[in-house]
Image 1 (cartoon, rainbow, N blue to C red):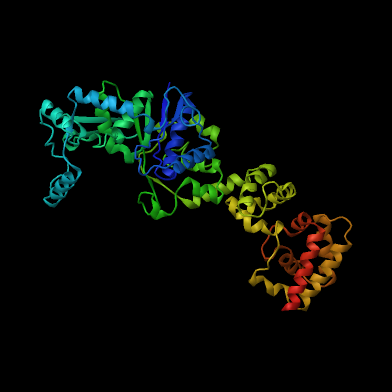
Image 2 (image 1 turned 120 degrees about the horizontal axis):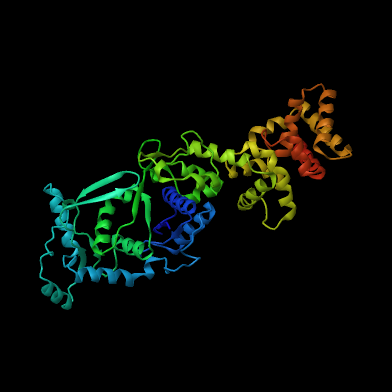
Length: 482
């Protein structure tokens, strides 16, 4: 059985690159009937926060990437946070020390920094010079008893380490270019490379699928697996995600956290679809792919090693397609929290909820992200303030006549339905010898506060006769004020 994991560091919010990694692992697990593990790698205590952990979990839930083992769900390998697994790391590190595969390094951090600076100035490699490597074991143990602070370093053997990568093929590393890396810091805390290997072994992870920024660490981890007497998992390093400028996606390209796209009103299904195509393809032509199809067809064999380009325009277009595919009730459901967040609707206002359900279909083809609905629908849920560039459409004798006649006709209508409203106002335009499109402009501004709005007559029906009459009257006051 395949066992895969996503192991984010809670030093910040979930980046779209991390979300892509989580998705690919999730898809492999779901397609194979395997296990998907969420593990929090919080060994960087000074930078890890509970807020970030909660945000990561929330974003994973939003994307629909459920996990079989991990925070909130448990599992046989609890705890799923590295800060609770220190004893395992210490046991592994001390075992390597006893076997002569690791050694104590008594070099102080400031000494190491000075040597690195000197090496760089002289054009030499800044790698650790291994000066503590040959201290006899008994002497080193005595220095430890004296209270001398030390780090524990892995003794890198001679030769070559080949990483068998499922995407890139075999990648060879000369061990001479791998320094004796630290396993335990001076304060006894584990480093990333030790913790991740111990965790993957203990959790029986079969495949490590992650971004190619981890590739330089992989030979170190392979050496650790072998030193611990275990076979390494299968590795697959996903292609880098780059911006339109060809540079790695980062803060220079704006906020690329999952939370930001969520707040903007992107749908999780659109985001999952888009992320899946960052390095993988179904058939080189299909763009819109639902979750079930992704699960049924995802395979590492179709993952490219070439950088994947982030395209905001493509994501926005894709999101619009998913919005258009939503049914009326579902569209209203996903719009509700957006409208509540904008302060236009109270979460417990059932009348407003019903109004939104009637209004949502009117804007389906006009919005690309859910937040686009706020300015389009605001006039249906609050008072209207006519925008400056639309005020001119309320002024002048002709526009005043249109508004007065509209008020009369709305009052006289028997049934206040969009079709009846439209028929009455078109008849009015004919009687006033004004083209309908021109006649409807001041009415639209009066009702919606702007020259642009969802379909006018349907909007008026949703607002109701009383509110429409009030807005016509207010528009006439504005016209009189000049």
